Image 1 (spheres, helix red, strand yellow):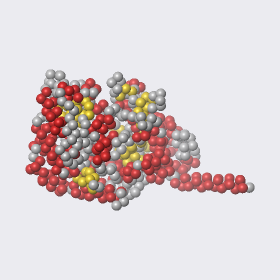
Image 2 (cartoon, helix red, strand yellow):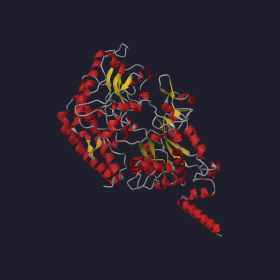
Image 3 (tube, helix red, strand yellow):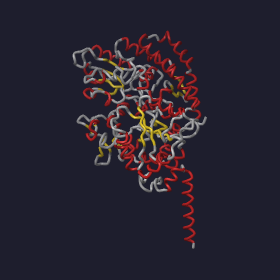
Image 4 (cartoon, one colour):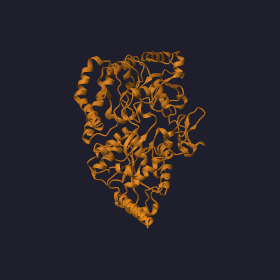
Length: 587
């Protein structure tokens, strides 16, 4: 009798649990689960839709808008990872592709015009999800996702619990989360610019040691200019140092505009980052948001670069905008099969410097200046997008999208491939179970032959085997290192030396010394006001930097510069970010 009572009680609890779970589901998901077409409890492994044909016959495909790269040659539906996702889960999305060029404008128009929405936006373009989603708050466009995360996404729940700063960055001002984040933890790789490099062959030819101070670097640049034909091609085409002043949005990680690397050497480090332009020139100093571009160190840095410019030590195209068709050094001198530049900043040496001369370049150690050191940290985050895979209010199956995203991030090896490319392209699976890069005789990364046209090009092999950006998560613990030998992927990236070179430049020192502005979500009205203000203030800074580099008239125009920035609203920018930081910190 007692056993029968216990059995009845257990059955009642299970029924109540099912009723409770169904009560939280959308009506269509509940119907599909009851019909056996959808499984959300993991009881069938990675399967989510048990019979894709029957599901689609009854409900159609779940539509997923996707910002597509213009250089992608393989249709999204045929990408190796997309096909694996479908095979593993039974989820076959209706991929609605829009070109990356002008994608944000097209999406914003879609959100405001009343046009039919997809079920979800897989991505919005690199780093754009937060702005687009926040701007749509109050328009009843996107579904909050915190309950979906709690119910269906244990992996993401754990990541957010272990990283309180990430939770701050994904929480909208209304207290909700929207979509799911894209996280690339790479030991801080994206938190400082790419490496500042020097041509070691040229340094040896002029008989000088590696510079350790800003003044010593200046002497090296002068020696490069005086030496003449250092690359041996019989032409006077050597450039002692290359930079792009005001590189802007094309310079996601602030690598190509050398100006900001030197501000700390003159007393107050400033920063720009194409991936977070609204926070350009801001720093937290002693807990307070500060607009550092009006510190006297900024003017001193400008005078240093004026000296280099006046002596002909910089590239003549240093004021060219950084665009895909520009003639600046990223698309011209640096791509030659003979070295033309002595000192330059890059993001990935492997992807931008011609292999014929790439090994001539080595990182410059952090240089001592008159009032500090070179190097800076970025107002950026390893959580690069807060709201990818944002689910719209038109979606009838939000639980399926949440379960699919959990599938994609729950297996470290799968998550790495979903982000950086499939095994057989950028990686091979070694006998020890670690995903490793193919290396040539020089130790350089090459891609596998399986992908034909994409051989020996990491970026193309990546975008032609996976979607690249979405709600993927790659954590530091996934990397195989001597300290953590159980990682699933080789401890390197598409640029084999990028992190090591950054560390020579002083990365660890900069991350420890400087407090940055996190990529927090602002109130909609704050976001709109900031966007209007920086459209004026950022060009003012760029204009004066270029003027000062050419004319050297810092002293005579400094007061006008500060006054112009004040009039354009830099105090209000500081106030908005200070209020936002105080708000998320509970002050």
